Length: 174
Image (cartoon, one colour):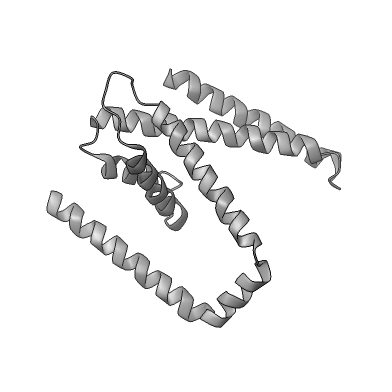
C-alpha cells in the first residue's frame, strides 16, 4: 500500500541522484562547464523559455479543474508538472508515466477522478498546442526544404492524419 509507494518514491529519487552523478563522472565536470561556457549567457534564455513553458502549461492545467470542486494550488500543480515531465523524459513510458506521477503527487488535494480527468485534458490540449505549433512551423518552411515533392506531401499528409487522430480523441473526450 502506502508504504510500498513511499519506498518506490525513495528508490526513484535515489536512482535519479545516482544517474546524475554517473553522468557527471562519465562526461566530466570540466567538459560540462566547457560546453556551458560555449553556450554562454544564452543558457539563461533557454532556461527562461522552459520555465515560461512550464508556467503556461501549469496555468492551462489549472483551468481544467471543475469550478465547483477543490483545485490544488498552483505550486502543487507546478511541482507535479515538473516531476511528471521528468518521468516522461527519463523513462520509456511513451510520455504517459508522468501522468500517473502527477495524479499520485496530487492525491488528497482533489478527488482522484477530478485529478485523472484534469491530467488527461491537459495532456490532450498540450498535444493539440504542439500539433498547431509544429504545423505552423512546417507550413512556413516546407517550400524551403530541399526534399522531393513526394516527401513534402508525405509530411503534410502525416500532419493531416495526426490532426484527425487528435480531433477524434477530442471528440471522444467530450
